[in-house]
Every structure is written in C-alpha cells, then in structure tokens.
Image (cartoon, one colour):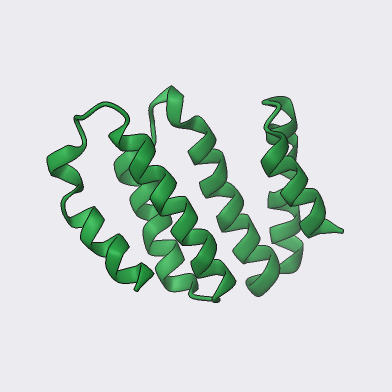
Length: 115
C-alpha cells in the first residue's frame, strides 16, 4: 500500500511543486518511504525513489538535510547488503558531515549502525 500511495503522490507532484513547503513535504514522504523499503530489503525501489529525490527535488540549500539523508540511505544499503567495507567508508564520511552540520539524528543513527 505504501508503494501505491507514494507512486500516486509523485504522479501529481509537478502540479503542486510550486506551492510553499511542497518540496519539503514530498522529500519527507520519500525519505520515510525509503526507510521502510530498506527495512523490507526492497533496494531496487529504494534506489528508484532516492534517484527521484536526488534528481527532481534536491538542490536547494534548505533541502540539504534531505540530501544528507539520501546519501545515508545509499550508504546504509551498501553497508548492510552489498559491500560492507565500502559501505562503512561511506557511512564514516557521512557521519563526519553530519557531525560538522550538527545533525545529531543522522550521526546517532550511523553510530548505532556501525556498532
């Protein structure tokens, strides 16, 4: 059901993307959905929506925390399911950025994942 709701929401995204806060709302929906997809090991779909997030929504300074989340989710998939060594290296780089930006939520999640 989550996949269907997300797909329907993104179909109409272009009609609403000029409204105030619409990009933040869509980015929030996408990252929350991607988190569920990773939990369910649906990496192909997670990658598809991360690409959507990276290519269609992100780029504005105010959305940088979502860009960091996107990079985190890609590194998490790499670490947990594809290449532990490369994933760990990516997670460490993202952790450094998160700590520099004082994004404690992402930093704490990465620390838990690495321990």
